View 1 (cartoon, rainbow, N blue to C red):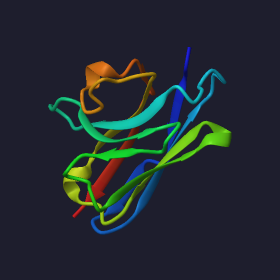
View 2 (tube, one colour; view 1 turned 180 degrees about the vertical axis):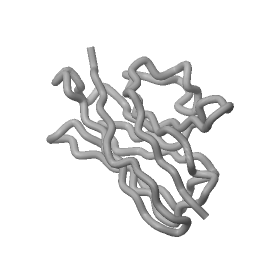
View 3 (cartoon, one colour; view 1 turned 135 degrees about the horizontal axis):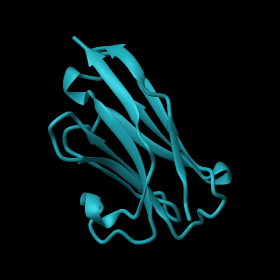
View 4 (cartoon, rainbow, N blue to C red; view 1 turned 120 degrees about the vertical axis):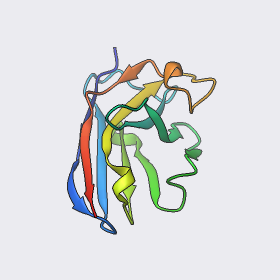
Length: 125
C-alpha cells in the first residue's frame, strides 16, 4: 500500500515561509492517485488545505490558504510540496499528507485512504 512520509515542518514567525514535502516511500504510487494536505489543530477536526490531481495537475485550495499556499508535484519522485507563504498563527497545526485514487469530495477527510504521520507547523506571532 501507499506509504506517505512528510517533512519540512518547524517553528516560524508570522509572515515567514515554509515548505512541506511528502514522498511515497512504498513505490506503489502512480498517476491514478491524487495527493493532498490536511491539517489538524489541537481540539479541532482535520481541515482540508490543498490537493492536486496527478495526471492533470489540477489544484484545489481551502479558502483560508488560497493565495498564500501552493501545492505542486514532482512526478518523477512521486512527491508533492506545499509552499506556505505569509504564514499566520492560525496556520499552526499538524499537517498530514494524504493520497487516494479517486476522492469524490477532495475536501472531505473521510474520502482519503492513505495518510502520513504528520509534521508539526507552529507559527508564532
